[in-house]
Length: 334
Image (tube, rainbow, N blue to C red):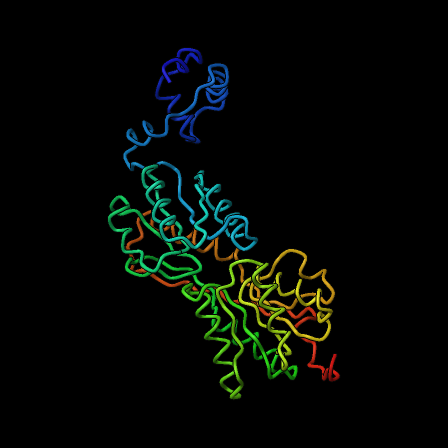
């Protein structure tokens, strides 16, 4: 910074104000400092900058989600990034892959980088370790799933209510044999969606058909084929995650059943509206969840000390065709 100050012909304090983004510096001086920074290829040392700042902030936050390649996670990430960018904050991101040990490793890594706060979609059954792994007073906001053993704000979709609405929708179109295909049963969202499914069936005394533990579209495709190969197969499917829905669609089309077996999926996915029939979904709002999580985290970083709160984000039924198919009576031997 001394080299930049000498090259620009300004004080060291002026250089510091410019590189830290202060807006009260004379534009002429800003231009001179930026020209010197470019000429000297100067880069801020974030660790040293943090030590000099009174608030010890690094201008970074961590976002730990299931899989940044999943459309839901990607939309949530973009919403958090947009909110952070508006504050001049950078986002460090990691995929957890439903692995509790990976969750802890990434939390440690972000703690070593002195992230100002974390947004976390819990993969493990207990987040009590955060109390010892994170520096004191580091705020954490939980997204998509609530935490166990650690107090923090939570941003959650109404999973059980959304699942109940999906199954009731299928019941309204005449279906009584409705199968549920879900993710790992230890995942909180899977349990809540399964509970919503069972509650909706229970109101009419209908028998459940359930297969869970499906971690890929390939596994979901195989499970769907197995269900539809039964002597009395379900006439409708409720799939608990977008990757499972994709596998079910492949199976239905491969078996030629996509126009007579109804389907409602939890979570929207790209091109779902362009299939034939288009896929009816219970859509979460990952953008709203990301904005809410970022807003809650920045409020905590800015000093909010109110009791932890739960922020609920509603789901939406989007009828497109696959969930509005009525059960057909198939000819014997067909």
